[in-house]
Amino acid sequence: MGAPDWHAVGAVDALTDGQMQAFQLDGRRLLLIRAEGRYFVVDEMCSHEDYSLALGCIKGSRIKCSLHGSYFDLASGAALDEPADEPIRSYPVKLEQDRIWVRLD
Ligand code: FES
Image (cartoon, rainbow, N blue to C red; front, top):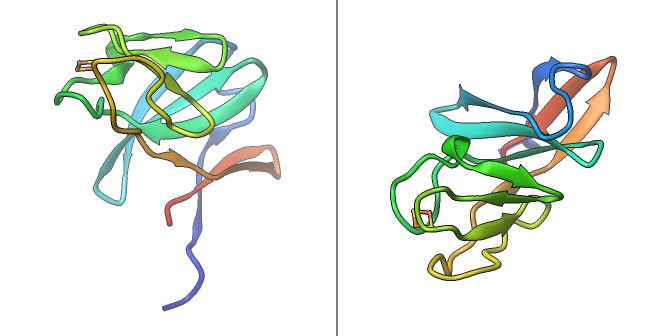
């Protein structure tokens, strides 16, 4: 197997701070998020129940699930509050050639 590929997922000015956009790549449901001047790509679905985090909101560098209120750290994916106790996945992101790139390992 070769090294994982980087995928272009948008222009560097695609979103403003606090915005997110759901998309699908390689059969995965993902969220592109801009928070505190950085871009993040994380799993769209909450780790607690099958519920879209796109319905939640961005607070600083965290995303809040609107169903039961758990927060997740956007950089690490860690669940910061109950009831969620499993992380979501946060994927490597880079900005290059005026585009946002994500790597799905
Ligand atoms: S579904 Fe997200 S915290 Fe329960």
